[in-house]
Length: 220
Image (tube, rainbow, N blue to C red; front, side, top):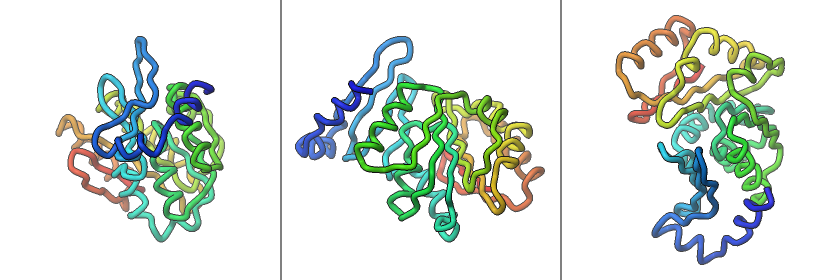
């Protein structure tokens, strides 16, 4: 944590200005699982070999969820985020005056520490970080949440277990009264996506689908 805090302390106004022209590397951990933290247009972006994650308060899936649930936001007291990345949903809701307690579940401890350090530097509190596999966490969970955001990816693909009846029911059973489940899905295979849509139709008659191109947000 000390190293990432030092890297964040070294960000100057010039660094922020430069980031509008080209992403600036802030911190990196190299090895079998290399991850890099960039500042891009004054927003933090996480980069791996496969893809990039998060985009500060510009992260479209998080913005789409906030828009769809806008009237519900004032009543949200606690949020569970499965697949935290840098926690863009935290920043998006915070910027809209919604400051619940966030439980951030992420299986990469390096990434989780980065997110925690960034929020601390920005003065955003109410963060409960949990380094855990999302499925394992849900299998043990006994808490209730007003909003559960599932944003779990391996590279650019959603793991198969995320879109199973078992996992979705674990999520639904962890919602408070009138709570909402939101899932970010990326279409890589049309037949797989059709299967996911059918499952949601079978399980949740009143779910909503938001089209973000190759990304789709499913809200229950």
